[in-house]
Image (cartoon, rainbow, N blue to C red; front, side, top):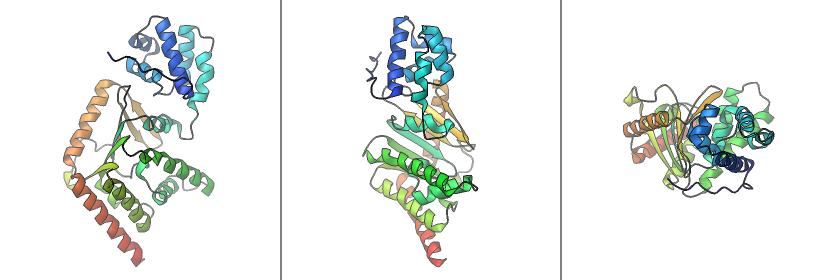
Length: 280
């Protein structure tokens, strides 16, 4: 078994809590699986908490304080570690993206958030919040675009996206915004920062036809899967479930166009939207 990674408790509130949780667990002579049983979670979830990857939720913090008799330490510090500018159902995922070594994502209807251009993101948020004031939309757009700083690193995380052809055809924000958004993806692919494939309509039914899928891998923790819906999302760590989703993604990639053919189709769609925009 690999030696646990040594955490720097000063790196973040979550790293501090993870280091202390590991200390208390080992002092009590409990394995990760044994502590997981007491919290009704998996041993891998405990490992992710200790590695500072997963966010400690208040209900778990309170129970940990009870188990280790730590006089509210975890409950008090949990709030600082949980603060986020993202919605509750996505906050942990946004943080996990910053620690992932690879992100694989299938998107059935929208360009993934990490790959969105500003105009496209604004149209998405305006469509989802038709009565929100401009200041709220501006904040949402800034937060989304800022997530893309991950791609400033030339190699990590490895980002591999499979886009349904519907993503290329749905006119989000009008033809000008679509042309800009698709060219942004094409530019990332051409400089080999991302891998992108298109799943054509001709494939018909497939393994992820019922929704989106995101898989994240880490250096010092097991992989995770994330599935989402309208204003909701679920982060999954059960090894069998994550493995099954991994197989689903592999099948999607096998059914999709090659990266070269996909890039050609993306640029062709961008050109068509440019022509349409110029005719308006």
